[in-house]
Image (cartoon, rainbow, N blue to C red):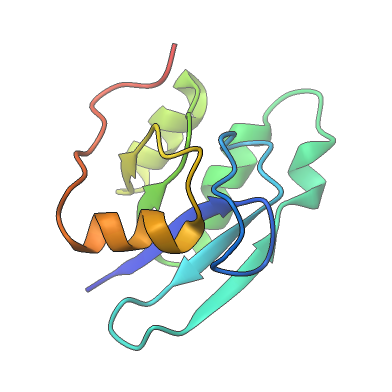
Amino acid sequence: MNKIAITSEGPTLKDRVDPRFGRAAGFIIIDPETEKHEYVDNGSSQTMAHGAGIQAAQQIADKGAAVLLTGYVGPKAFQALQSAGVKIVQHLDNMSVQEALDRYLAGGLDYADEANK
């Protein structure tokens, strides 16, 4: 199974899913087969006036993630993620990273077919 990226307000699986994609505090990248994970700080994108979502999408693609779990993704970032072959699940705010991962692995989430408006 391919890696999963989850927007996170902090570096642990107990932290909350960051509802923002491009300006998320960071991303937890998880290999679901080995359960190993790493935290990727998104600090440089948070301060950008424009293009934060596209830069964040590049980070996700560079880490080899095939799926993104997050709160909301804007139109430009959504297109960039789709171009990189990353499937997107949105509306996962108000839960921990671990809860979002568990729900995804249980098959209880649908992929988004359009950006958040």
